[in-house]
Image 1 (cartoon, helix red, strand yellow):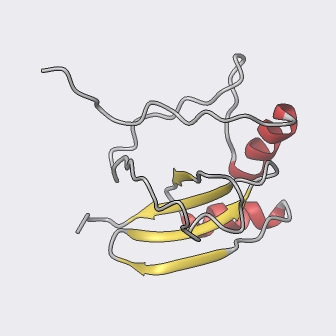
Image 2 (cartoon, one colour; image 1 turned 90 degrees about the horizontal axis):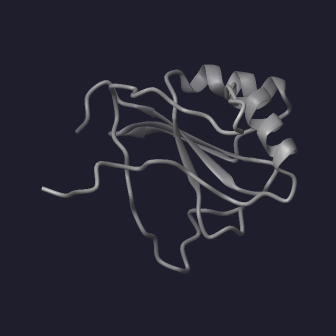
Length: 123
C-alpha cells in the first residue's frame, strides 16, 4: 500500500544561511554535512507529528513565521544548558506534559524552535 511514512525533513529559507547553520551547530550541536544539512538517526523513541494550527494561533509567538520547528532531544536540561552557554535563553518551558518536557528558543532567523524530550512511555 502506498503511504506516507513520516516527516522527511525541515526546509526553510534564511537571509544568512551560513549564520543560521553556525548558530544551530554552536547552540544545538548540529553536525552539518558537506552538502549543508543534517541527517538524524532514528531515535527509537517519540514520534513524528504533522499538525496544522489555526491561522490566528499564538503558539508560534514570539516568531512571526507561519511555522515552528520541533526538535526531539535526549536531555532537555543539557540542551538548554548548552544554549545558555551560547547566550540563548528559552522563551518558555513546560515540564508537566504527558508527552514529555518542552522548551522553546528562537533561532537567529526568527524561527521558534520547540525542544522536546519525549516521556519514557507515550500516553
